[in-house]
Image (cartoon, rainbow, N blue to C red; front, side, top):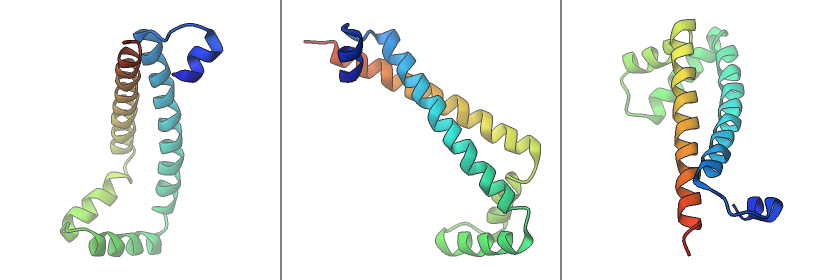
Length: 109
C-alpha cells in the first residue's frame, strides 16, 4: 500500500485495494497451478504414487482408503478441474477481500 501511494501519489481506495489483492490472488493461483501440474505429472508414474501413498500414511492420521481417495482425486480430469476452480475462487476472493480491508484500515487516520 505504501508503494501504491508513493507511485501514484494518491491514497489507496477500497476498490484499488481489492484490485491489488485480486491480482495477487491471480499470481498465487498461477504458482499453485504450476506446482499442481508437477504433482499430476508425478502421479503418472506408479512407483512415485506408491511412495507418495506411504509418505502420506506416515505423516497423517488418514486411513489408507482416505489416502487413496485423495490421490485419485488428482488423477481424474473432472475432479482436477473442480480442485482448480475451487482454488481459483478461494484465492482470488480471499486476497481481494484482504486488499480491500487493508486499504480501508490504512485510509483511517
